[in-house]
Image 1: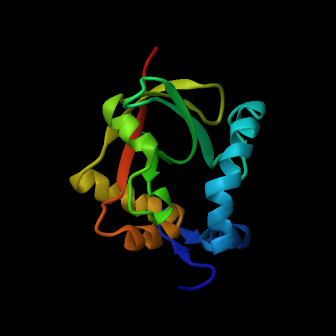
Image 2: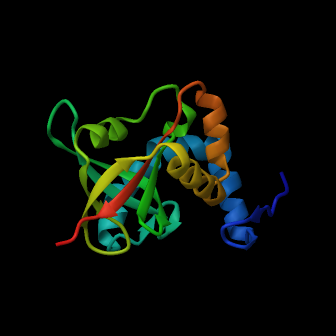
Length: 170
C-alpha cells in the first residue's frame, strides 16, 4: 500500500496530513486512543465547536444520540460520519472487534436518532444497508479510511454493519 494512496472518490492522491492521519489511526497507539480517550474528549469538544471539531479533525466525527435497545435511555456516542448524497454513513466496525458496537443495536431497535455534526443537532433516521447499497457505501467508507478493510478482516466472519442516516424533515 503506497503511503500517499490514490482515492478514487476524491479523484486524487491523499494529501500528506490525510495519509499521516490514517497511519496514526491504524497504529496500535492510535487505535487505543480512538477507543478510550477520544470519545471522552469528543463528548466535550464537539458540542463546544458546534459539531465541527473532534479529536479526528475538522468535520469528521459527530455525536450520535440513540435510544438504548434494552434500557430505552438516551445513549450518545462520537462516531465517524461520512457524507453521502442521501445523508451520512455510519460504519459499525467496532475497531475490528468480534462483536457489533452497542450503538448499532440501538439503531436497529430505534432508528430515530439525533446527530450533532457540522452544526446544531438534527433528527435523522437510520437504515441498515444491504446488497448493492451496502457495497457502494462500503467502498466509500474504505476510500474515506483504509483501516476499515483491516477491521473487516480482523472481525470476520462478522459482517460490519453499515448505516445510512437520513435527515428527517421538520
